[in-house]
Length: 407
Image (cartoon, rainbow, N blue to C red; front, side, top):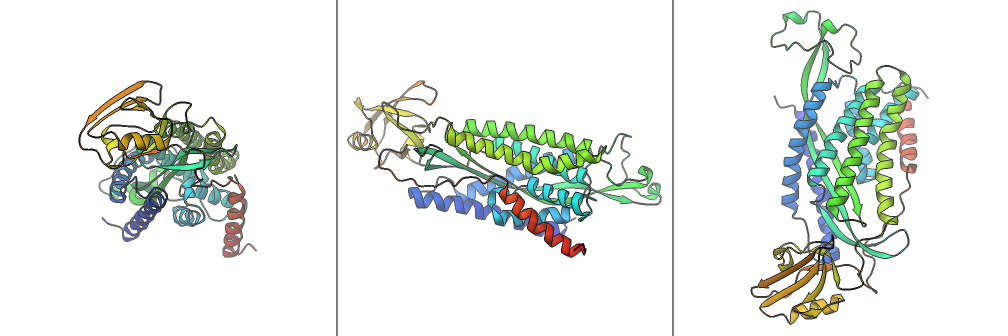
C-alpha cells in the first residue's frame, strides 16, 4: 500500500538531498572551475544506500519493538526540516528528538514517550554511522582554508546526504486480537520498549512506512578523507549505542528520560565539535613538504586519475627533473611530450614510480596544496557549540506553550 503522506515526505527529502549536492557542486565549480562529484551519480548512490540503510533501520526497529504511537513522529519530521533551514548540518534527528523530549519533560507538551523517540533517534544514527563508513568519503571537496593557528592549509569538505525510507511499528489496541487474521505471535520479552501498553494481550502492532533524512558534514585537514570517515563513523556508532542504552533505561526511571533527552543532542554535538576542533588544531597533512609537490585533489577524468595519483601523494620528479613548486610541476609536465615518468612518495611514505605513455593532455589534472601567496578559498567560522540549541529551543518552546494554552 502507498501512503500519500509518506510518498510526499520522501520526495521532499529527495529534493533536499539534490539541493545539497547541487550546492556542493556549485562551490567546487566556483573555486576550481570543475565539479569533483557528478550530481546524478551522487544522487543515485545516495538513493541506493538510503534504501539499504532503511532496510537495516527497519530490521532493528522491529527487533527492539520501537513503536511510532508515542514517538512524536508528527513533530519530529517537521522540526528536523525546520532545523535544516537553520543550518544544513542539523539535518539529523538527534537535535529535533532532544528538543521535543525536553519540551515534553518541562511542559508536558507534546505528549510523547521519551524512551521511544530517543530510541528511534539512536537507531537512525546507528544507520547513519554505517552509511558514513560505506560512502562518507565519496563526496569530498578539496578546499584551501585556515586552521586554528591561522595557517593556510589544504583540506576536504565532506558532505553526504541520504533519503532513508523505512518501515516502523504503530501500536493499536483491540478488544479481541484473536479475531484478527494474519497476526504473528511474538515472544514475551518483545517489545523491549513497551511505551503506553497497559494490557499486552490486547496490543497489536502494524507496520507503517516513514521517511527519514540523514546527513553528514565533516572536515578533513589532518588526515585523508578515508581515514577521517572511519574515525567519525566509529565515534558516531559509540554515541548511537550509548543513546540506545539510555533509551532502554528510560523505561525504568524518569531520571534516564532526562539523561537520554539531554544526551541525544549534546552527545551528537560533542562528537561533531571535537571532530572539527581536532582537525583545525591538529597537525595539518595538506601543506607544502620540504621537498616535492604534494597533491590535494585529482580532477575526475584527468590524466592524473588515470595514473592513479591520490590525495596526499608527493611528486618528487617528473621525467628525472626535480619539482618543488606548482610552477615547476606545470613546466615539467608541459615539456614531458609523449612519455611521462613520475617519482613520488605516497601518503604513508611508500615510494611510487609511475611510467605513462600516451598523447599528453594540456593539464595533468592535479590540485596541489596551497603555497605562499595563495588565497583562502573557504573561511571556516568558529562553531558556537550549543548557542544555536538554546536559541532554537527557547523559540520553539514559547511557540508550543502558546499552542497548548500554558501561557
